[in-house]
Image (cartoon, rainbow, N blue to C red):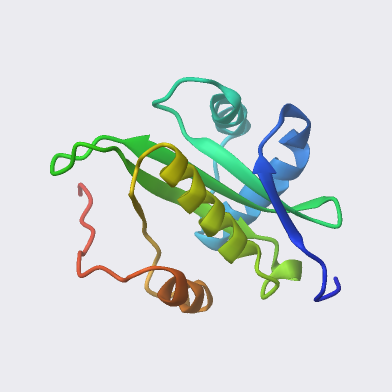
Length: 151
């Protein structure tokens, strides 16, 4: 794809189902995870729903083709009055990496958080995700926190 092609970010719509599934599979593959088809269906329906406890989704297009996605969620924080925004998933098709898709999606989540009155946005990544971390180091601030999970 041409370098001068602009990235368009918009909310997910029902007709995106097939391409969203391809992109989300790519994301899950990167993290060596597979999920059954019913989880795809449930998650997609939730992304389109209006329950404020569910994730929202923005997608990126280049030349009219879906090439990226991000899932994010607003939640309360014990130290703040305002909600905070958790950016859970961010993925760009390998064919368009380096074209600004990831940056455009993160900036769109920042804008959604601002519009919702949530001044804080955070996300996690694995330490081996070096390529993405180059972007994250430019667009965010690395925190000193270490994540633990239940054994």
